Image 1 (cartoon, one colour):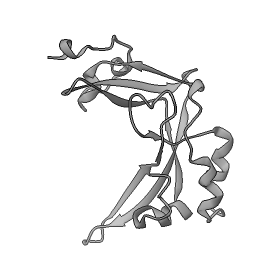
Image 2 (cartoon, rainbow, N blue to C red):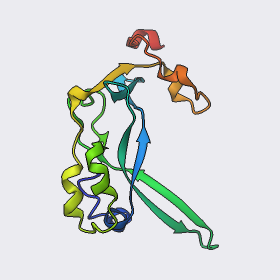
Image 3 (cartoon, rainbow, N blue to C red):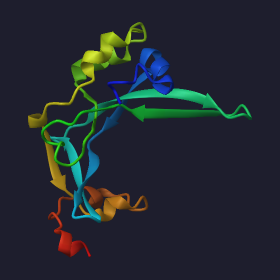
Length: 156
């Protein structure tokens, strides 16, 4: 999506003037196993540090006039670590790029376009986690614990 954000009406203005950082210490992606099941993976920095996704925010109004604040995470092509799990990955910004990304005086999308690329794979880690993450009511540190990769037969 980062490749076309400047062309899409829903993102064009936000890319020019409503950029944000979305902090995280990891994210999940799901890899298909067999024809019916998916194995979740936790993906983050090799050293476990917090990082930031390239985000855009906006404020919409319902017909009643009530404001609704929204945000989105820009995505890009996957790096070598993520490619076998998913066809896209979030844009992770380097800390030295935060100031440019957030600069309200930078209105030209071509000035921030070079930041919207896959993060370096060898600085990241990926490991399988339990399918507990598939349910929103499961929200605790055990969701991010490493587990064995399921085989297609063990998922049925």
